[in-house]
Picture 1: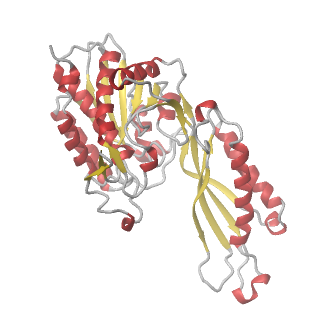
Picture 2 (picture 1 turned 30 degrees about the vertical axis):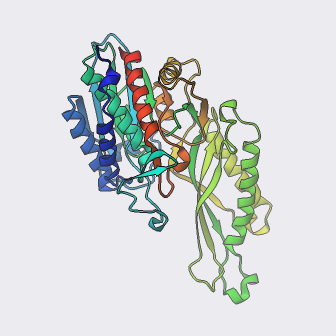
Picture 3 (picture 1 turned 135 degrees about the horizontal axis):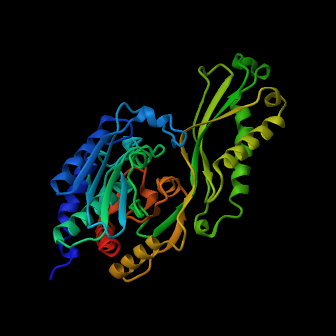
Length: 418
């Protein structure tokens, strides 16, 4: 008698992943729609019940709970595929995002970021391409697991829903649209890169912009002007002190990280002529939100730190910097530690690998907070890859982890829905 694991086709999974990686599905590009259409066709060919819909981007941005967006989208598509049971068991949602971040400096890559290539590193079989780790490998694993269960012919009580979502990297448009579309479940696994550990919680991340005024003059008379760059250094020092205070005592789930709630400046723009004292600086960054922290309280703390820095400087006191919030607004999120999905993923992982996974929170925002906070769906992250490789040049995933993840998710489907 065969089991669903006997029907797990690792060669097909690898090819599916290669195909996904060849689609340069950066947020806001036509390829972000293309990858969704590809999955809708493929999942329909696998005999799953597919729901494909056009996302009303403009309408959702007016929703008071909209989680933010950083790129312009003329079109976006939502896709789910269901392997239905008889309705007497729970619904398991497997949620994976298909959008990827831009490759950055292509000269830092050893090849085209969107032509996947195999690499052997100390005996480890790696697949290198943008999106391999974050998180098309996880999407391929959840797809392969569901296909294996379907091909086994096992009768399920509950249903499995595969969800391919867009816009995760810049706020969570796809999962927000999924919930507004009416998709629900009892429990959910997001196969984001966790190194096959279990993450039941994520800190939040708020995108902000700080505008610092100066006073322009000829550089030869710079003391008669005010450099916005020099004034920003005062604010930057205040933000660094704020970051240190907020990380002095963190939730035990976050204690493994050297910096649980980072405050990072990502872009700085100032000046338009080398011989002119710059009269304006704009800095954009990302502000970590603590587990359980109210987003408005977090915003107020950063704004207070900037205001205090301005109050201590004669120029900024009368010409204060301005803080605005834009783009992705990720609240923190946490599934209760006694949730059944944590125990079930741990059991399936231990059964396949022979050891227990670690349990900890992630220092970055994710769709977990939407699924748990807005959807009431108990959610964990569990997937292949090292998050340190995500967003980096020569992003990679170890195929052994992808294969293990697919096997664990296959067993999990049977355990939860069978």
